Amino acid sequence: MPAADLWIDAPAKVNLALHVVGQRADGHHLLESLVTFADRGDRIGLSPAAEDGFSVSGRFAAAVPLEGSNLVLRARDALRAALTQDGKPAPPVALHLVKDLPVASGIGGGSADAAATLKGLARLWQAELAPERMSALALALGADVPMCLASRPLIARGIGETITPVETMPVMPMLLVNPLKPVSTPEIFRRLSEKTNPPLILPADLAGLDGWFSALAPLRNDLEPPARLLEPEIAAVDLALRANAPKLARMSGSGATCFALFADHTARDRAAERIANAHPDWFVLPCLTVSSREPIDAAA
Ligand SMILES: C[C@@](CO)(OP(=O)(O)O)[C@H](O)COP(=O)(O)OP(=O)(O)OC[C@H]1O[C@@H](n2ccc(N)nc2=O)[C@H](O)[C@@H]1O
Ligand SMILES: Nc1ncnc2c1ncn2[C@@H]1O[C@H](COP(=O)(O)OP(=O)(O)O)[C@@H](O)[C@H]1O
Image (cartoon, rainbow, N blue to C red; front, top):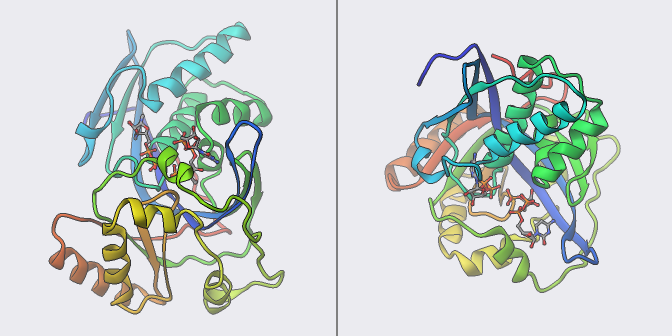
């Protein structure tokens, strides 16, 4: 991993619940999703340079494109275009992506990378974009990029453009497991049979770990049934998680990553060890959810 002047975290996104509640005229599905972030993920290194550069390291480096379609470069180009339009400088920059999250896995790694690049470049270039403009720029890069800019517990509505912070979510020990079978998001949405499902409702007075576990239990991920049909190994991941008595196990996003929430670190770590031993070819990541009270300042 090269040295860099500034490092920005790109934490994994987790859809604790994802309700599909309608469909727009253009075919995109309307969602209500309770989202949080892990304290682990990719990282973006940024340094001023004589000319633009981009390099990638990390466990999943080989799975991401190195050229202009990479969301890191698309984010750089989008912010630079906006600044150029304002007559502001956006000088050359060397970007490095540490790609430790599996690709096309329902935990928004590419979106997190794009959001972290926007945050880092805004800092490096001392670029003050109004929050609404930054959000619009993020949304143009992907529906999950605005929520990744926030990187804290929230409810996302629409396709992800309407974000309401969630204030009382505690830190929860979490285990992410992915069978390392990529799942195509458009394919999952295409296979969704019911487009209008019951809304996501949370009790108003939610507090404490037990309160949250109870509130999360009846919620759903409406993308999980079609994802399980498309990728049967999701059922194996779910079974492996449930065998370790978590408080909750569910799929994130369009899959195939599943998460489990545990009452304590010990139970989580025991589960992580058992699953990693039984399935050395799976991605197993013990982590914590971020706190509502202390949104992570992504700068390292
Ligand atoms: C499902 C979610 C939940 O957070 O996450 P991931 O599984 O990607 O992590 C997101 O809504 C993923 O949104 P986004 O990141 O924009 O998905 P993309 O891969 O760009 O979308 C590919 C295609 O999926 C369909 N799509 C996507 C989002 C949406 N709300 N309705 C849709 O119908 C559209 O056909 C779209 O062209
Ligand atoms: N920096 C990046 N990291 C991951 N995927 C990227 C990146 N840039 C572009 N992509 C492309 O974006 C697609 C979705 O990636 P990703 O964000 O990992 O999906 P998901 O949200 O399902 O976890 C992949 O097909 C991948 O080729």
